[in-house]
Amino acid sequence: MAAKKKTAKKSLKSKSKSKSLPPRSEVAVSDTWDLTSLYDSPEAWEKDFAKLAKKEKGFEKFKGTLADSGAALAACLKFDLDVDRLLERVGTYAFLKTTENQADDDSQRRIARYQSVGSKLGQAASYISPEIQSISAKRLAELLEEKPMKPYRLMVERLTRYKKFTLSKKEERILAMQSEMSSAAGQAFRQLLDADMKFGTLKNEKGEEVELANSNLSEFFQSSDRNVRKTAFHQYYAQFKGHENTLAATLSGSIQRDVYYAKVRGYDSAIHQALYADDVPQSVYDNLIDSVHNHLPALHRYYDLRRRKMKLRDIHHYDTYVPILSEIKSRHTWDEGVESIMDALIPLGTEYCDVLKDGLTKARWSDRYPNAGKQSGAFSCGTFDGAPYILMNYKPDVLDDVFTLAHEAGHSMHSYYSAGNQPYQYYNYTIFVAEVASTFNEQLLSQYMQENAADDRERAYLVNRDIDAIRGTIIRQTMFAEFEKITHAMCEAGEPLTVRSFQEAYLELLKKYFGPNFVIDDDLTLECFRIPHFYRAFYVYKYATGLSAAIALSKRVLNGGASELNDYLTFLKGGCSKYPLDLLRDAGVDMEQPTAVETALTHFEGLVDELDTLL
Image (cartoon, rainbow, N blue to C red):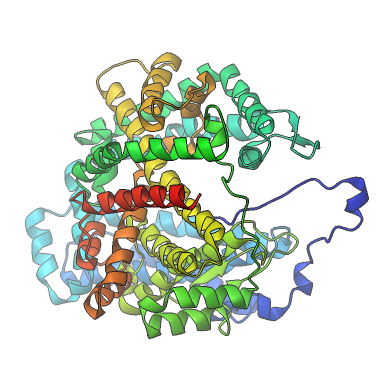
């Protein structure tokens, strides 16, 4: 989750008084992360990099031996994992150093060298998966029963799940040769969106002429001046109207690619192929959509509440991002922000809180504040051998940054527990569960802050923040997921994917999700051409299921006792030792049933009612 970055052009008078970001060399050491859990120095990194560069030839000795015995197969897998583990450590250090100052030449050279050696090692190891796949089912079953294979059994079973969808060596080689070609549609979209499309300039609410771009569109939508929001909306989408045929062609190409690969490999559909990796049945996807449909009246009620409280005659899409209430003015120094988070996370137990507090204060897991050249936003970067580092650009006057820190801390504690309780091959949790621990922490922090709000206005602001988080993460992402399902089904049925068919499908969804009293501008149907995630289909639903699970689990822990807390902590320790649905089921939430999503949406309804009362 990226921290919100607020920028504004300074007038000539104020420019001389503005405070520039300090260079990295002037940042206090106590405010930076301590990377010594990875390497004490660049020189120590160089030693491991040299070891890594020599590993390429080591793969050759295992080639052609994997069916000989369980010991032979285990030896190959151990070597591969050991190389991967060292590669992770070397690569993580190199990456984190680049984020400190992206203009630093030494860091850029280091990451380039890592990428080069990583590519060579990947090529050297590329025979392992096909060779395992070629072993007969009978022989593989025998190998898996041998004692040396016990630590790797689940790994191999997951790999061989794909055997029925794996083609001959010649056919696989042909598909592999298509990889660059298959990404052409997505690359064309990114070039068009990020480089070729120019959106012009417009005046913000201060009367300043500002360039409009993808990166700052949200800032205009949050303007208190409705004319600024409206102008930005139509000016932005005018470019999409001017390129609608090209955009429709690129999106169509991406969908056709998904359908082609699914058919070639023998999957039932493109969505079947996408869900197969996590062993997720389509019922999970369909239950999500059905549950959101059932609760859309509450969303429509919220839009009407927003319209009334903003004193608008009608409500448009560009009216849905500006805060109903101006942001509550509050200041949290780093230590105060950490203290608030620790107070909120008390229900997670002494060990969890002690480890996290130490990481955020004494052990220096986090790089705290902005500096010249530093990567923007925020992230957590957990590894098996190092601390679970957090990059922040913390601003004491921005309340959302406290939530961002809680969010990234959730990721880091997930990594901490997984790495501490699983072997390397099973520690790295999947995307399906990745957002659970982070948004779980946000839920606890939000509840804590609401309970300790200074007045109804502050509480209303926090409640509205929760509403918009659920609206953006569960409901909006589900609308996107439904669009992906519809358009891929159209392609599989042989229906044409054109500007008109895309917009007609999207318009029906807009009407359904925004409701009868919402003004759907014609330009809004062009939104279907600007969502980058559509080029990585059947991914966005994981945001919705992740937050749904987090809300359900946070309520379970808050309302439960030692058993419920232990279930949740066991989930954090699980890594990828089980499939995502099994990990969540053990934690107390069954995502194959609609209960978790229903719980989250019922919570949403209650928040809308509460906001109406508070306002």
